[in-house]
Length: 175
Image 1 (cartoon, rainbow, N blue to C red):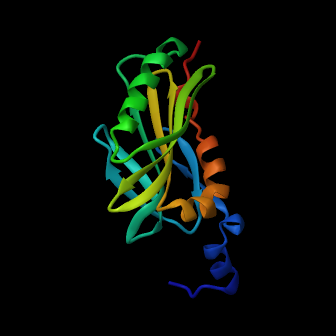
Image 2: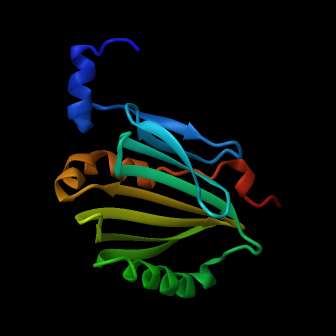
């Protein structure tokens, strides 16, 4: 592996200077991640998920994506019930505190998102979870920080990462 340049070292400690790269999955789903982060895959229960971590030995700060195909399409009319279940699940996380949540409709896509703090491995973590639906596809995008200090450091990159997810052409209904 090549030695790090001075600019590379600065970028690793200054998220505002670190470029974002595009991760594109086989079906065309795409999202951004910090260029210096390492890629990992995991079993999401309904298929593979992808995770990019700041430190390969610690997934406390990461972004992850899981996409699955549902048996029926999701519409805006489904959002109240989906939101109810989503929030109930987040509240079950140990020592969870919901900081904000919202649901949105940008036809043909709908979604729910929340920010929370919670306890994991004896540490107070913070995460932003967004569930997006396009027809029969559900995407779960998570931006998580190991603690509040890491959140403040990486928030400048989490915002474009969470807001730029793209389902790709295969997800949209054809007329």
